[in-house]
Length: 193
Image (cartoon, rainbow, N blue to C red; front, side, top):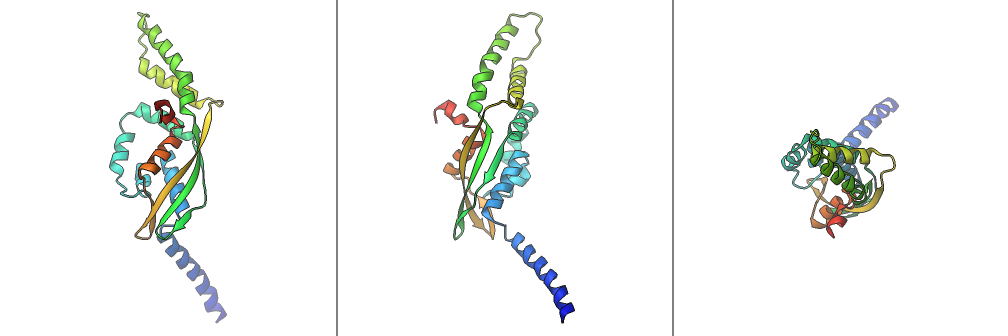
């Protein structure tokens, strides 16, 4: 009897943990996994955690321009987050995440004058074969990599729904605006939103 119990207990633990993993985990784990995939620019993984889960649009955005991807990757590499405990009500949940990333408006205030100066200078320099767009991208990348780059922290609310036993992020208008504001370092402030 003791021997049977010793064998059954580990099997039961394994079965229960497997069943719980199959139930989609918790809402806060869904948000954390999504944010990990977002930082890694992994559209296939991101789509697993979002209602609708159509990765084709995300893939198209990430594949448009490799130089922009490099800049975005550098920017997202600075992003950190802390996911809070979920508030669950039946098949819906809200999860707060405190997201810290580069303060993009402050970055632009620093980079814009330098970029304009370089562009004007290259216009009047006959020997310059410098591409203004490329030099601006390089200025931005250098500024992002700078250890003293200004960071900003935004508390973001994620709305989730449970579909087929799995928690998925529902990027409604409010959730998407909050998320975009957080991961762009309050860039919407530049446009008066």
